[in-house]
Length: 258
Image 1 (cartoon, rainbow, N blue to C red):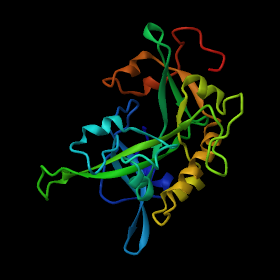
Image 2 (tube, rainbow, N blue to C red):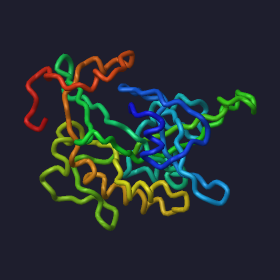
Image 3 (spheres, one colour):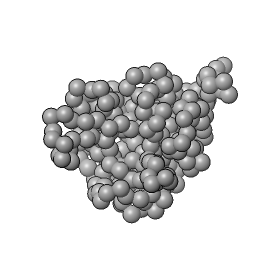
């Protein structure tokens, strides 16, 4: 995610609750800060705001924030059932802007990283949930007493979207997203503008309907995504530059899908 604050504010028609700096990064690791867009009820109206959140949701009941490293993603099929996410998906939903994401295929020396991006390089808007965690070891006036954290919803890359009844469609031999399915069986839930508007609404209380909405259109949004092999340098969080997303020749001849 390498867009500037001004571009994010303009693109999402959002405002700042307080001044913040979004550091461009081409190699975001779990527990790093990422921009999120959310809506809050402010002075009787709805305000769409840009915030920075720790990637990896920390539930309010957690003893320490370390648990967040295991909570970077939330399976959309079970998010309503999981104690860590069910309250957040009901009332604390957000959008996570991203330019793209990485996946790896293969093993050992033949393990090849790939960069997934929108076909027009216009970026992705991913469905997320967020939480606030209070650090009781800090004083009331300490700005670090509250940690804002987020998780990104995922769905299957090998099935079509859910039916009207909410269950996955079955019986299709071909995966819904063949190129992405060849890379990984899960994909982040990307949202259209219309779906994002409904997902963010703080007045919406039917969480099951909202999860169904974003899951049902996620594959359509992802159909045009590109998959490019990139260099092994992305495997180290110490490396962080635009060179990481440049296409390279893969370790082994690329599969026809790529």
